[in-house]
Length: 492
Image (cartoon, rainbow, N blue to C red; front, side, top):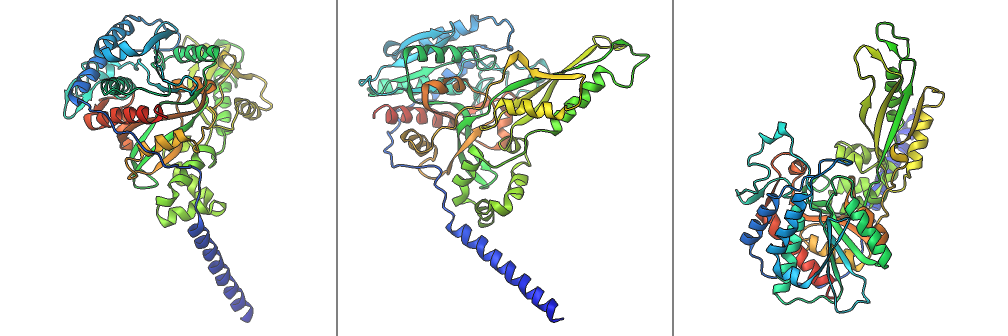
C-alpha cells in the first residue's frame, strides 16, 4: 500500500511540475520574429471613390481573359485596356515613363530625385480567369458588366487582380495631383499573363537583371487581412514573405495492350492507379517551420492563453497544433509540400487496353523542400516497381521562393499600414499559390505579397469563383494603402 501511495504522490508531483513548466514557459514566451521599427506614415491624398469605382467598373468590362497555358489568346482586349489606362489617368501618363516587356506587360517608371537609391516595385496583373458557361447563370450581376451596386463593384477581376491594378493607378494619379515627388524611384509592373504562363513577369525580371536593377522591395498580390483568422477569432493581416514552388510530376505506366475482353491481372491503368496512390501516401509530412512558424510566433501575444501555451511548448503540443491547423485544406497546405494528382489519361476507347497510361501529380513545394526531394520520395514509393516511371513534366520544377525579411524598414512600413493604426495584428505568412512576383526575387532584396483587403475566409471563395466583387470600403482602403505606401517608402 505504501508503495502505491508513493507512486501516486510521485505522479501528482510530476504533473504539478509539468504544469508549472508549461505555465512558466508560456508566461516568458516572447518571440521577436518580426521587427517593427517606428515609422511615420504619410497621409493619403484626397480620393474620389465615385470616380475610382467607375474606373474599376470600366476596367472589368474589358475582357482580358487568359484562356490557358499554351493556348492562343487574342490580345485585342489587352490593347483596348492599354488605351483605356492612357485616357483614364492623364497625369500618370504625362509623368511616368512607360515601356513594355513581352509586348503586353507595361512597366511604368516614376523617376525619383535620387537615382542612387534602390527603387520599389509594385505589381498587379491585367489578366483574369474565364467564367464558365455552367456558372455564369449563378452570378448576381453579369461577370463582365462591372455593375456598381450594393456598395460594391461586381465582376471578374474585381479582386484578382484588376482591383489592385486600378487602385495603384488611382493612388499614383492622386499623388501626382497633390504634387508629390518621389525621392526613390517607383516602378509599377502589370503582368499580362499571370494566370497563364507568367511570361510577362519573366521578361520584366530578365530586363531588370540586364540593366542591373536591384529593388529595395517588391509588393504583389498574395494574402489579405483575414477578418476571422482562426487562431485569433478576429482579424489578422497576413503578409506573404514567401511562396511555394511548383512542379508537375508525370507518372507513366506501361503494359501490354489488347482487347478489354481479355484483361491481364495488371494493366497499364491498374499499375498507374497503384503508383499514384503509393506516391500520394508517401507525401511530405506536416511540420511547423519557416513562414508557418513565423506566423504562429507573430500572433502568439494575442491568442488565448491555452493556444499560446501550445505555441510556446511545441516540444509537447506540436502534434496537436498541426492537427488543429490542418483541419482546413488551406491550413494544411501551409505545413507541407502538397501532392495533388490532377490529370489522368489512358486508352482513347473504352474496349481497348492501353500500352501506356499517364497521370500528372501537381506539387507545391514548401520553402526548404527542393523539388529533388519530391522526386526522390516518388521513386522511393515505387521501389521494386518496374513498369512505372516518373519524371518532371517539361523536364524541371521550380523551387519555393526565398523567405523575405521581417526585420527591414520596408516590412515596418507595410506592417504599420496593414495594422490599421495598431488595431489589427500583422503576421508573416506563406502564399501557397503562384504569383508574378516569384520571378522578381532575383532583382529584389525582399518580396512581399499582400492586398490591403479585409475579407472573411468564406468570402475568398469568390476569387476565381462566382460573384467576385470589390466593396467600396475595401476599394477605398486599398487606394489609400498604396498612396500612403508610395508617399512613405519613396520619400526616404
